[in-house]
Length: 233
Length: 184
Image 1 (cartoon, one colour):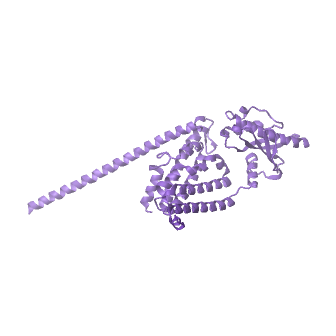
Image 2: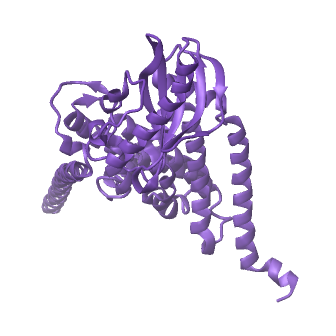
Image 3: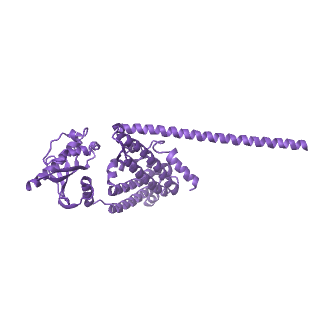
């Protein structure tokens, strides 16, 4: 994998195709789990781990799995890693296991994981798929953690469980508050993204115009030189 | 279709691939399940930590058998090295007839054992409003040595069924401790 391709995968996973803010995938766990930063980070890391592992295995088996049974095969692979994560959390991080509740086994049918398996891992080499899993996971983790920070600070007046002040707005701890924060963040992220994208396009256009005008100028000078040479001759 | 044709067909390939993935996944999960198994000892220690914090250890398991009462049951009775009793009790009649399990810590208060702390251990999936149960609500049981008829809304507002199940669980634990109090 070349450096430019790695950069492109990273940019796609975190910004251009951010699963939460740009593609609006994985909405169910995003709304239900993001009431605190700890839960959001836990869900993000769990999804990232499962994304990397499932992408690697699906990519490695892409020539073996028949097209007709690819979806059941993907779900089997994803379910295996989800069970591994569940067993690990139950053994070593029981508090997070309890907080994530039913949304932990539901990662099996998370659109982000199934989407990346279907659209990327099943068509690309192992290393590229691993990178795609990593950066899509980072994109999801950053997004859900950002929502978690806003909701925990406003809804509980705390950060990572530490009380910041007594003031809190219960609304942000509820699902309705989660919808509001999620919607505002999607709007903000897309507004910023469009602004940067338009600036980039404008810069590229100006550079293209400058290059073409320089080329025209160079062409004109050559033509006048040739005319003068002819006159002298 | 002959056997040879079947073995060369796409159907056979699909079944074989799915079976292989399922078998390998099953094997991996079986190994990890063995490695990361959570045994009773760990569960007991987690229960102790949830009510007493760290640093308290188990002295003796008094009972592991389920003792049924009218609105709940006592599932486990433990004696801690602080000479306090930790009871895991289950309360019935939660939301949609679900259950809630709690850990109830009893400490000697004068001549009787009274509730020192309560923590939720587990609950059935139908108890969807358990997030409304806070430590402040559970602290209403502290100091009790006799069964209570506390209003569920005093434990948590908006989760009256789950609060009732918690109350039933604590009452079952108190009922068990009354026998120990009577034995002196």
